[in-house]
Length: 289
Image 1 (cartoon, helix red, strand yellow):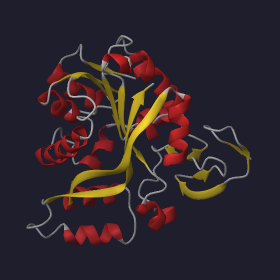
Image 2 (cartoon, rainbow, N blue to C red):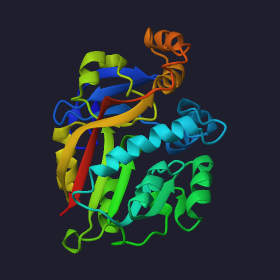
Image 3 (spheres, one colour):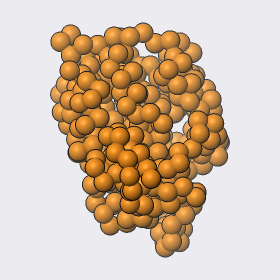
Image 4 (cartoon, rainbow, N blue to C red):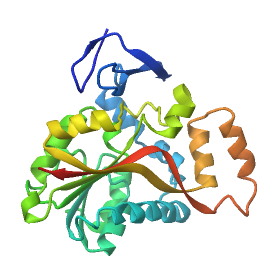
């Protein structure tokens, strides 16, 4: 017997996969997928240690190759918000070491960030100042309400225990749409994606730290219930290198892809080339209503 976090359906659910001894189930009503039983807050926080950043290639601090890759991804993402908002205060929740904020600052935004990891937030604080970066959660920050024009959450919403409550908090912190603000830009795993349909139970988005998996239908429900409207939702495009993908598959092992990328990684001519790819996520822009 399971209960859906989003639509409150109670009953049997199909088991889609299993991660670290926990089932990932799909609600038959709204199609939301989620881990059951969910990790505790302390378990989640322990995931985001220095070890977690080995999958970024950043265990010894910022890596130039990864920095270029991440910044390219965020530059492309930020272009999608420019038709709606070109400047103002931006809050990046789950900012890591601040790559997105660096790119946002270049195009005219005033950067602020929240990051749970002490390791990553210390790097971001060096870039933007202690008053601009909060180490903790959005609930423990002192950022004012009705202050931000844009809030970004890339690869974040699926990591938190209460995504509905997160959107409600964001709604309070955003300026009114009538005054020119009031947008959220999010990337989330999409269960309607091509990679999900092909890989099924072996989908690479199925991880212990990913608590929820969305699609357009249930995201529309969640947006409407929290005072937002979806104005953009398309596959998220990320910049990758073969070496980065190899690092990922050595942390999240998946036969035979781990073996294949370990072999390809020995070809120096191509292992650092950057290319754009979709990985089963959607880029969503919400407007405050």
